[in-house]
Image (tube, rainbow, N blue to C red; front, side):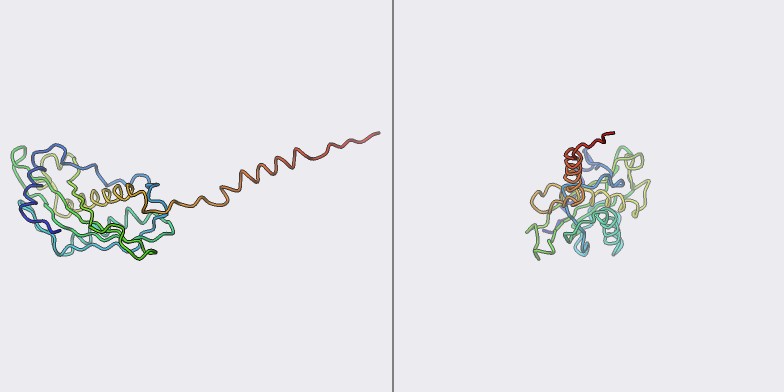
Length: 213
């Protein structure tokens, strides 16, 4: 589904009036999500050709969203080194990169709208029939509280949104209980207690001996 400018205006209005519009920052990776199990990232493809530029927004240069998001996908997901291959397809559906406004009066917020599709390589099929929509806003900081349009370049705004968007994708994937194969427990880890128990048994059953003078 393609976003219209009218839909983006509605999102922008919510962003402008809501204190909840700022997202938790995705700059820090945090711990790996155990829910992703044996995940290994295959292809991570971003398309941006149908992205709708919202009102009161700077224009993103062609290829800029693709470069920013693909770099962030690699940064966050390359650390998962499982054996089951999954591919991610990301469509940039709409965005606003806030332009300079009047602080505390008209300080527009930046946001990004993504459509996410996941493929299971071994099964050769999509795991979600329809793209899952994710909407993220810029992280709250001293710069964005005033207006990121006044304090940040378009590239900095895109990096902020890309980090938050990919972090949101990771959180969403972690809620899909039946998609990912649990990580196998290393054989050495399961055999050590058994071996230790065997050693203990062997020691306990050794016959006692003594020497007579």
